Each structure stands twice: as structure tokens, then as C-alpha cells.
Image (cartoon, rainbow, N blue to C red; front, side, top):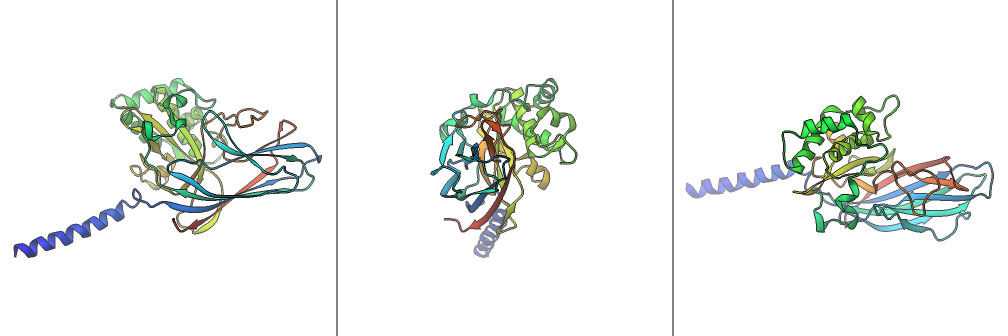
Length: 329
């Protein structure tokens, strides 16, 4: 009888463990391979033969994201081969092209195979050299040290002591108070003061407020942007970008968060400290100076192509993102 009961206990234990692992599938998600195409259309210029410079973000590479293959298709009016450069502040890489303007549309295509792992943050020696906390303490143009944000951050942090607990408090505030709402104007710029005032917006606004609150309490925090891969599709187009953030706690290291996905899905715990493999990261930081430096103002963030003609910004560009899921290596 005792032996039978023990066998039954073991069977129930493993059945329970299996159910638990299914419930925690989000956290134990396997690496994913994606074929990703970044296409750019340069619309006709009024005058042909002018010097045209184009910068296009190149995917981040680190322990949790690898570019396995890269291929480009360029028209004849661009110099060959292209250059892959990196800006020194945050290490963001980019494709830099020089060519001539045309009175006809010009198509550029960049194809990648990207291997993406779930990301659980990193601590000190396990992080890359661009993850030094001091790089992410200062204010950005649209993420200033603002009195009202300071007050809210101090209020949300007063009941906790550890930096990691403060980060969780700021994350909970943003998820609780912000609405994912892209109506009207003002959203999408990552303006922390606007987000604090109107309490709505998209991922740039959610995470700018989170970063501003963190930095107000002397906690380094950084902005990251890329694309989100639909998990219910095997292939297709991606309409736009997605962004998220990380904050640095001395007791835990860098802690990743995705407040907008938490808001949309209701999975608040799952998107704190974990980013699933359903994304491709392209760049970090705000107020970016490219390499070679652009003549125009620093970029608010860098996910879409940027171009200049004879040193003046040229905005007649279209972009298209598409993906296909591949079998993981």
C-alpha cells in the first residue's frame, strides 16, 4: 500500500511539474531564429546628382542576440561596398551609404538572419562595455529631470529601500497609470513630461516616463528600440517599431522591463525582469549622433532610416519590415 501511494505521488508530482512548466513557458522560451528584411524606398528627388548620405540601423549583437547572416541589395547609384559603422557613445551599429540623388525611386534591401534568446538582464562583468551604469544617468532632451516626475518617483519609492524594489515600484506605476492610446497628437516622441501630464501614449512614452522616474532617484536607466515579432504568425509584415527599457540596480544589475506589453496583456510579473525572444533589438539611447556624424540635429531615437542631401535632412523615405520564422539552430 505504501509503495502504491509513493508511486501515485511521483506520478502526480511530474504531472504537476509539466503543468507548471507550461504555465511558465514565457520564462523558459527557447531561442528563435528570424529571417528579417529591412527595405527602404528613397523617393524621387527634385534634382539628380546631388550627394546623398543614408544611415540605416544594424541589429544589436550581444550574448542574447546574434546576426548569423547579412545580405544587401543596392542600386548602381550607391558606392560599393557599403560600410557598417558604430557610434562610440552606446555602440549602436549602422549601415552607412553614399550615393547620388535620382529623379526615380530607389530601392534598398537588407536581409538578416537573427538568432534571439530570451533576456533576463545582466550584472557587471557579464554585461558588454556599453552597459556601464554611468552612461545612462544624465537627462535626455525629452527625458529631463522634471519637478513633477521627481515628486512622483519619490512618492512611489518611499516605501522601499533596495534599488531593485524602486525599479519595480516605478514599473508598477507606469503600467498602472498609463494608457496605451495613440489618438490625437503628442504621443510617440518619448516625451516624459508629456507622458507624465497626459498619462497615455505608445511604448516610447511609457518607457520615457519610467526612465525619467528611475533617473530622478539616481538609478541609471536606458531606452532600447527594435521590432516586435508577431507570435501568432509564421511570416508577414511588421507595421512599425517597438521599444522597451532597462534600469540598473546595484543589488541585481540591469533589469529589463516592457511596460506596454505588460499593459496590453495583463502579464505584469512576466514583463518585469524578462524579455521574451519575440523581438529584434536595433539601437539604444536617445539624442544620437551617428557615424559618420550627421549634419542635422541628434536623432531622438534610431530605428527608421535617416538621410541627408548635401548635408540637409532628406525625409522622402519609406521603410518596410518583413519577417519569417526559421527553425532554431
